[in-house]
Length: 362
Image 1: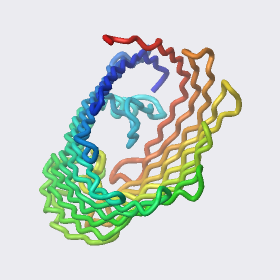
Image 2 (image 1 turned 180 degrees about the horizontal axis):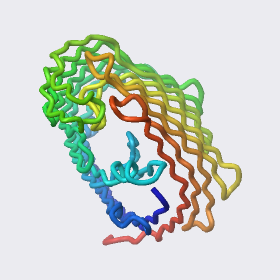
Image 3 (image 1 turned 180 degrees about the vertical axis):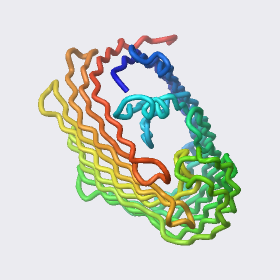
Image 4 (image 1 turned 30 degrees about the vertical axis):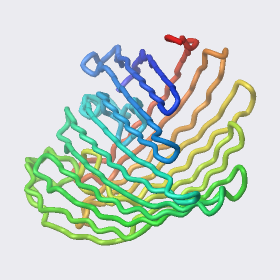
């Protein structure tokens, strides 16, 4: 959809006191298309985190996020980062005129039960709404609790029970997910860590009476109902990571139940991700990231979609406070019912200047 310019800024405020840590951040800016003024948009993302230690064994953590961001970021979860769709108007405009607003709250309590045993209790709430293209809004409430055992400083084991409640717009039925996960992590060396988690899960998807006049992406035109379904299976994942100073290599695989990112309701999502970064000199860093995801609607093997993106990048530190980043991002989404494959690509040059820290108070 042509070139565009972004002007953005970010502010951080941190406060630390014995037993208390507080962090507040705000990121915002604007995206301007010289040739397509109807695509101009603003971007905002505000976050809050508070940690409170109670005695020597209990810690409380609360976080809050509010974001209002432009769309055109097909299943991209990096905050504030969108990808234009290749090709001209009008198809690119339809997606680039999307916006989404999200409010996320989390609370977690961790406690040390003994020298090697720990407990965790927590809850997450997410409310996401879309504007522009006819997409599916979602509200989700998660609660979880578990026990962890740390036999040595190189490994830990855990058992966690989690329950997800998801509610969708446009007539899609709500769903409830119950899962029991076992987890294990092991440091094979000072630089290599392996972690695994997995266990049985049960998904109860209520029947859907869809408000579909042909505008709901991912659902065939005219389809109005989806039956109630109960699906059981195994969820989990694995990660291996190697870190040596500023050099990182990480490979992840997960199979989880989640919302369909506005395209579908409850989906089983299989995701593979690779992240590589390397410092080739004191000033130059290279990076390469890639993700492939397969999403299938619970109880409907014929409805789903696939997406991937690849993102190589180069970063050059001009001064201690200024850096340049060159990045090429390419992705594709396929399989949405009634929608041709969607390509997206962005080549960007980013100039970033960080102001010195300013102390406030003592």
